[in-house]
Picture 1 (cartoon, one colour):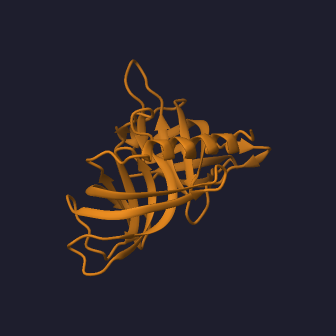
Picture 2 (picture 1 turned 120 degrees about the vertical axis):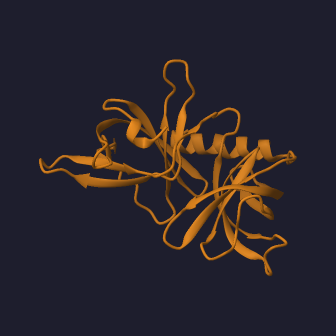
Length: 221
C-alpha cells in the first residue's frame, strides 16, 4: 500500500531507531490530502515534551496494524517532519515514496545496530567502510556513499562485531549477503538491504539479547 492510502483516524506506530536503541510511539492519522500529497499524524508527547524525531543518525519507520484479518504493513525510512498549521496546531508530516511491505515481527524481526564495519565483494577494488544499519535472521542492511557501484544481486561480505556490556559478551558474525533492495538514506548515502541465504549460528540469540535489553531500557526496568 501507499502512504496516501491511510485514512483519517487510523492508528499507526512510529518506530524510531538510533544505533542499538529503538523506541515505538503510537499515534494516529489526522489528515490525508491526496492532491497535495500530504499525510499528517497527531503529535506525541512524553513527560509533557513533544517528540520531534530529529537526529543525525535517526531512522524512522511507520507500522500500520493489521486490519480485517490482513497482515501489518511497514513503511521503511519515512521522513517525519514537525509542521505547524495556520491555526497554530502542530502535526507530523509523513513522507515516503516507497510502498509498504508486509511485516512479520516474529518471523524476521529487524534489530537496529548502527555499527561500523568493512564491506568486501569481488566487484570493488578495495574494502569499503560501511555502517551496518540493522540485522535479522534472514538479512541485513548497510549504509554507504552513493557513488559506490553497488547493484542488485551483488554478493557482499562483512563482519558484525558487537560487545553488549549489559551481559558482558562479545559477538562476531561473518555475514554473506545478496543485495536485494536499496533506497536513499540522505543526499550522500544509500541503504542496501541484503538477503542471507544460509543460517548464521548464534545470530538469533544475539538479536533476542539486544531486543530484551532495549525493551528493559525503554520501560525503565
